[in-house]
Structures are given as C-alpha cells and as structure tokens.
Length: 630
Image (cartoon, rainbow, N blue to C red; front, side):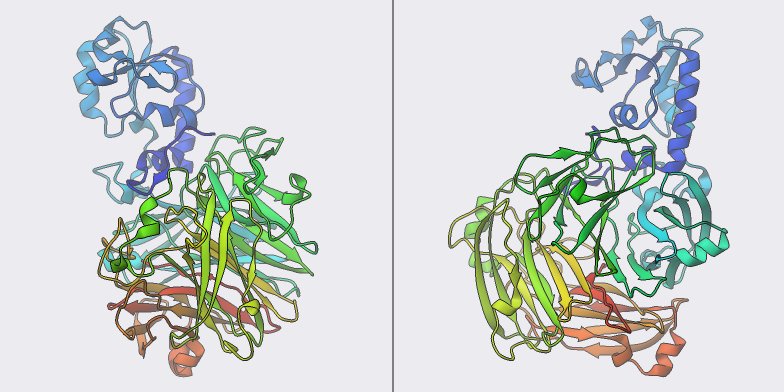
C-alpha cells in the first residue's frame, strides 16, 4: 500500500499529495530525480514532513540522510530514515541538499551557513506547476491551486461518455475560469491535451468524448481524463455528472456522480454478478508510478481472504478486470471489497447483461472509523438520527432493490431497517432487516414489503439504524440500490451513505450542508437538461430526522449554457415526501429551447433535499445516480 495521506474527514484533502501527484508535477519529479541521481548522494532537509509522500510518488534518487529543525522530531522515522538535527548538516558528505518544501526561498536562505561548501541546494519549487495552471501564485500549497479530478472517459464503436457540470465557482466570486485537460489512453499514453475557457458566469460545462475524438483525430479509446480547473473559488474539487451512452444500437445508458478525487486504501459497494451478468471493474492507475503485481486485490466482503491481481498496471493506464478472474464463485447479492492500496481514485464498474451495459461507481471504505456507542442511545432531540434516503421508482414499470453495504474497515455489523413513504410523506411500510454481519448477502426487494397498489407511482425509502437485535453503528451507513424494468431489458444502480437531515440540533458534523457548518438546512443541486433524444429527470426527497417544516420551499432555476436565468418554477415537497421532476414537464417548451445546453439549479433555503438524477431514452433505457451539490 502507498504510504501517503490523501484525505480524512477531519482535515479534508492533503494538498501536498495533489501537488506531487499532478501529472505535470509527476513529469517534473522525473527530471528532478534524474538530476539528483547525476549529482550523487543527497541530504534531505524536511521542514514540513513532505519527504515521506515524495519518496512514495517520486522516482528513486540516492539519499544520504534526512535532517529536521524540530527538536522533538529528531530521531523520528522519515520514510525509513532516522531524522537528524539540521545543525549536523554541515558534516554531511552529500553533494546536494534537497529542501522538501515549496515556496522555499526563506528555508534556503536560513540554511546557507549549514550547507557544506560546494554543495548544491535544490527545492521542490523545481517541480511546481507553471503559473498558467495556478489560481493563487503567491501560496503554492493553497488547496484552490489543485481543483482537480479524474474522469472515466471512453469513446469507441460501442460507447461514448459525456461530462456535464456548471461553473458553480462563479457563485463564490470566481471571475475567469479555465478547464485544463489531459487525456490518457488505456496504456497510460497521453493522447490529447486541451483547454476550455469558461469565463465568470454560472454557465454549463460539457466535455463530450465524441467531440474530443473528432477534434483530435483520435482512434477509439478507453482511459481517463484528468481535469484541472484554474481561477476557481470556494471549492477545490471538480464535481460533475458523467453519462455513458451507446453509439451502437444496444440502447445502453448510464450516469454516475463525480469521482471522489482522492485515492483510498479500500473501496466497497461492488456487487457480485448474477449468473447472467459480467461485472467489469475498471482499474485506473492515478499515479505516474506503476502499480506492482499483487498490490491490488479483491475479496468477498467479510471473508478476509483477498485474491491478488498478479500483474502490474503501468502509470496512468487502465486495466479492465472481470471480477470472476479473481473471484469465480462469488455471486449476487454478495458484495466485493476492492483493496486498492491508495493507487486509484474511486473506480467505475460496468455490468454487462443481455447486450446492454450499465456503469456505476464504488465508494470509499473508511479506515479511520470506530463504532460509536452513543448512536444506539441518541437523544430524542435527534429524532430518527441517521437516514439514507433512496427513491422507489414507479412500481408499474420498475422493481427497486435495496442492499445494505459495509463501508468501513472495522464495521462488523449492520443493524438496519427500511421505512417506506408515499410521495406525500405518509409512511406505508417498514421492514426490520436485522443485525446483518459484515459478510451478509441480504438484498430486499421493495415488492416484498408492499401489497396491492401501494406506490405504483413511486415514493421513497429510508434505510435507518435499528438496534432491536443489538449491533454497532458508526454513522457511515451505506446502501446500494438497484432498479430494473419489469421486462428485464434495462437496469441502473446507485449507492450512497446516511446523514442526519433537517433538524436544528447537531451531532458531531451532522446535519451536513453543501456549504457551511452544521446544521445543514439548505439545498443547491445540479440537474443536467439532457438532449433532444434523452430526457433528464430527478427524484427529490425531503427527509427529516426530526420534525421540520411541513413543506419545502424549492425553486427550480433554469439556466442556459451561458449562465443566464431563463425561467424559474416553484415546488413544494411535503416533509418525508418526494417528487419526480422532469424539466420537460416543468418548463414551457419555448423556455427549454432558449436554455438548450444549460441546466437546472435546484435551490432551497429552508431545508436540505436529497436527490437522484437520471436520463430516459426511447426504447426504455434509463440511468440513475445521486445528485451533487455545491
């Protein structure tokens, strides 16, 4: 496993990691390592603890000793070296000193009296990105300089991909945005680089694989797109929705929420295949260093018998892995755990069945969480506590299945039940699933909970903790939700985790908001408009852990591609209720024509809504995944 810090829920993302792992910086690191190898042994001065991730992500170069200025750090381990006091640097036989810091002029000036005569001084400013890729040129490790993400990107004779998002940074004061992109093919080779000028208005951003392929005269490809937003404000993550659509006649259609921008030790929520399916995991190396053979493995969730992939994955390349290569005897509704060793950003998986393909993503499995005994006896002031809302699609056409998914390394039990609500907020069903073990294979078909004509037009469910049979909870309750047309021709699935919703009391960092500290009592959600051929829709859910306002006060703001408001519509959703929303049914056709290429911003200042977005095409194909907010 890579010994790097990428992200934790207390401190957020590690900017040092992003600064060293950026593809442009990775090339500079190659040149720096080559230069240091030519000079000879290197003394490292490590004032900020950057040497450890540098040692992991940079090519090898000869190191003599590591020095620190913190008295309490003397003798500590720094990537396998015992740290020495900086005052001893003058005795070093090294021919170069590497200062592992950015904006390091002051460090270099202070060091001059301790550097042996004739020794060259080098700093990490040698691997800085060019100023043209920086938002804040005066403070290099400002997180806003690394608003980046990876995208599963594909265009061949069968499938294409389309990234859609909005310039949400303009709402935080950004005035001139550029999107810089580098496209890698399946072998990790750079096949295209390009920029988009976005400007300072809240317009839409679209990157379509077919257009990129034509513009750069590319052969068919499956790889990853690295995107870097420059000039941004407010958010240092590039959020997006990604459609995967069919070029052929298969009718395949999928959408996935943005990839989490941080590599993780493990991922979970990968479904095992049914007997009539293939499940393909797309492993995409997020670094400029190859993934060694044996560093990636799959395990039946809870089995603790991981099976390793016995081959290397080169830098930035993509490996198509049929999960049955490693786990031939594991089948739905069992789940698969990916032990990725922090080599990959949250991967996509592809389910192939009956000539159609659907794509979804796995989720980060937390390694820092322990059971929280307080959750089982939370104050009544917190009401129903943690809720995981999910849509129940109209039962005339669809089946809806819920699968609780362990999403923390130390999570050994899942005490859960399902509560079922009509669109107007009336609870009509409840199912105690049990205190499930980590290795459970228990998927609940919503049809088994309801009788007669209930929810023929849809509704929603909420997965909640229930300690009737004991068990432990950590607040990281997750589930996978699978939807299928009743004729079996197409399916979609999505996964997400629980939060506390819509109450004035707070617990730890709940209720969360899309911006600002808890309690999170507002909504800002993005909905793509779709195309002439494919209708966009969303399911908006108003969950409440405790008693809150009886109705939402929701505004649906229609923007054109340039960020101009075309129309607004009001929407009221009853507390604990839901609403199926399609722009084609909400707005006049004349307004939709003016807004072509734009999007809908779903805004509410009175409550936090949770949403799922999707597309519907002729022939029955559809997609569904959770929405993103900003």
